[in-house]
Amino acid sequence: MNPDYLSRPSSTKNPIPHADGGGVNGFNRDPYSPRPFEGLEILDVGCGGSILSEPLARLGADVTGIDAVEKNINIARVHAASDPLTSLINYSCTTAEDLVKENKKFDAVISLEVIDHVANPSDFCKSLAALAVPKGAVVMSTINRTMRAYATTIVGAEYILDWLPKGTHEWSKFLTPEELVLILQRASVSVIFMSSFFLE
Image: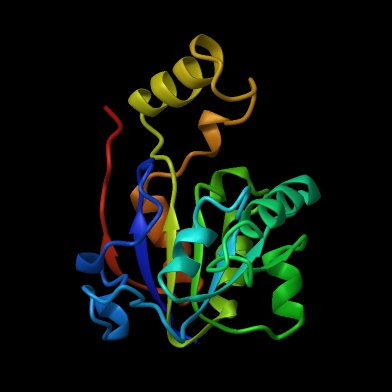
């Protein structure tokens, strides 16, 4: 098992992996095709209300979206059902760890802004790696542990603007890019691309 890893170590609102980072070209796909992910099985871990799963399905992927919160899965199912291109997304209230026990495999495993909410980031990354086929891709994003992230993500989003419930994030659980790379390498994941994004 030696999947590749494409990382977004800072918070971003763009849910689709970029072609220049291997998101499309990493699978030898035409980035100008209207459905460049046709035929790929992609797992969206921590899918929430389907902000990532639906765009991936529209790009041709066979998408499975999982979330540990049943309410999120119900919302995702209702929303996806309104569009023929997304109605076939397979949503399930389960965890990556449970899928590993079922010996599930995917061409790409994507988990955006989830790792800072799990109890054991190392075990979580090992589960993501185990779900990717050999030479598959693991794509992750996380919030870097910086004072800027604390000010914007916690103070700003949770306490001033009230965009998120208070306590959604814990600054101590944010990972630096170097920490995340080390965790992934210990999970036998080859880190081939990283990119930082800043919210203005």
